[in-house]
Image 1 (tube, one colour):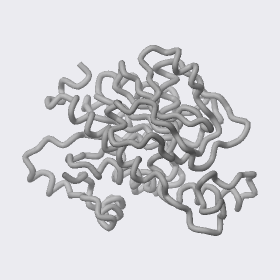
Image 2 (spheres, one colour):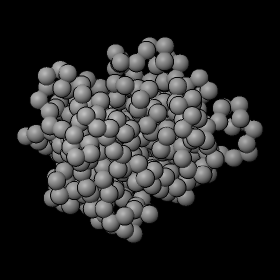
Image 3 (tube, one colour):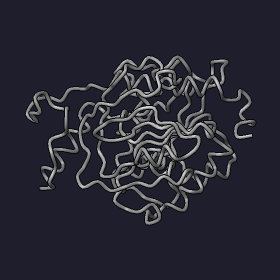
Image 4 (cartoon, one colour):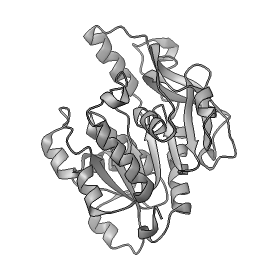
Length: 307
């Protein structure tokens, strides 16, 4: 089954050209099936790029997905047209007021990791989101800063500043081959990393109900399952496009910002060559496994989600 998107959302054409099965709302209405309702709380400044990245991954399964785009209520973005935000996004305050529920929610990263959580302008509302997920979302998937914020809020695990940016494609070990989220995973895999902070494994291990599934000797824990809440916390970027790290590297070089060539990304570490995508297959596996797990464990009667 395809992912259901508004036909005028940019991701509709992008994914259609890539061969991802997409359907309009009119087509979906003719199918006698309950789609999985997945929300995307998009905290990234480049909204459209992020929409495409996550829709590509969750739309590649055999299940019909209904994607809802959500934004923080008061926070305004300068990188995406106001018309796009008004047409396709709903503020969280509106979503909360309707009382609607979701089978899954993805909370993205945000380029604010240098700030303490409490210094983030929308932190108070984000804490409301976290509390709301406990009663209105079956499974929540926090990514990069979003995952760090969630594991801090729910489990008290702190984020720590690095003395240099973890930047590149790092090898990660599969620590639990029996995990439903790692079905089909190799013993190790490559994941794009782009952050100035880290979570420490000893702090994660000290919290009951947390299980580290993927970890790197060079960049630390990457994927953590919160078994008590059916949540996943991913501190790295499986969703990245082939050229996302290149765009970040080129931006920093152009701005004169000190930055190392991203590790294990360009052939022979040569930025003049096209980068290689070494993570795409495992990205599809992880998000496909998450969608499958949500489908197999969520209530058909959505009113019972969170009960």
